[in-house]
Length: 177
Image 1: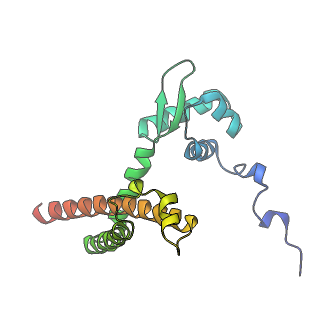
Image 2: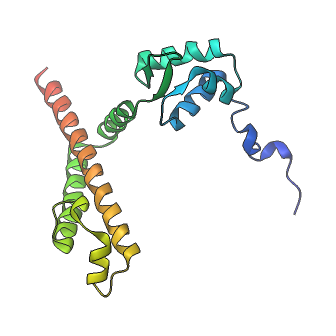
Image 3: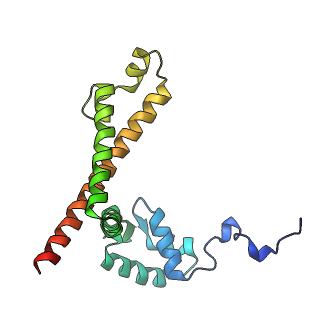
């Protein structure tokens, strides 16, 4: 087997963003930022001047991608609501009302099955340890896996339903306009 040129493979982990421009590197860091972070820390992470980072962070704040927290120093964090809105818009754009409705039905069926299996209205209402101890064929890991899948199905159903409503509303507007 012939050796491959070092330029053909992925960059070394420590240089993963080296080929991206500063804006893209800051955006990549923002995607990972879950708590308020000072501009200087973001600038250090992407190896740029804090003034440059501040410029892009201000722009991302204007777009709603980050949330700015005033203080000394000002801090920034990822705006999860923006990414949720973006995901719903993408679902609405990529799927027909019927496809979205079918997915809502599938997820509702899965959720209903979990509600019946665990005799509870939500995964939060289930004591996983007690449930696993009370059912011989269920391990604690299997119960936790079911509860995680159930919670995910509820979140996904909400997204698909919101996308369905958005798509249906835009189709109604197009039909009447």
